[in-house]
Image (cartoon, rainbow, N blue to C red):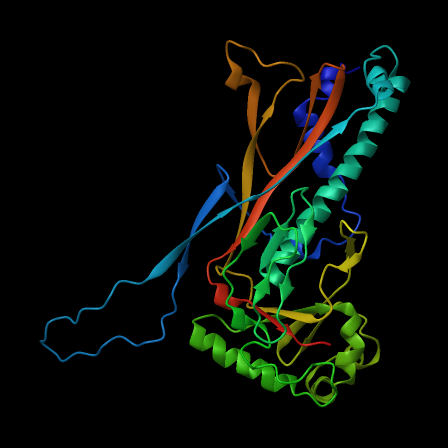
Length: 368
């Protein structure tokens, strides 16, 4: 039998917390938050490299080397997002955990803890998924004074962003305005219109990406509700009919959430969340298409490290720092307090994403 201190040890709780399965597909987390780089502290400094579009100068044999200017870049500093919550343990469950003579009672207490950890993990991971979707689709995150995630407004033409009412924290990720909205005039007709030439739009994006010093797009992310719109598009229909080995997959029932058309991978995203007003929101907003290159150096995921207590009581006055351990990623630990006497489970995560080349991201308002 384990003591209750062993059951509430941070290593035990963190292992259990990380093992909780996600109840829905965390699409943005799984797609864009890969192998994050660990960071000490709360802020990240990242260099954004400017585009190189001019060839170097030629020379004549025997002449002195021509001088070229060092590569330019700009430094962007941003803070990681911090998730940290407290979950009080039911006093009866705590009493059960202390019953080292009864495996049945102790298991009952552990089951209550596990249920609460599952609830906390679900909320934490959904918050992370929504934050990452805001970064990718809106290129800005708004948070109010209560920690609620708000929705900024994006001008459908210019791509300019306006913070939501009540915003306390506004985090911008440096994507140019003309990479949103109508993409600087590239999107002249909606993709939900049958006659729209989507290929012309994609070719214009390819050319502008080269001018901006960014790779061409390889992946297009849209809400799954637009499968029918794309299937009805004349050009989309014709390309799928004559240029894919699986035309029925595209034209009949879209039986996959990823297809290849026009040489691009199209991803159809489902999933919703409920905001602080009780309004149901789509993880992938319905009016937009997110377009990015192959996953690579243009995107930089980060994870923070937090100190968590090794025990459940007050720190040692002699060696206080030895009572803490630095934990990377998701974590959970228990801690006791008094007035009134209680034990709480604390759960959290620290993370962020930066764009080394913000010109690599395109978010077009392509559906009405």
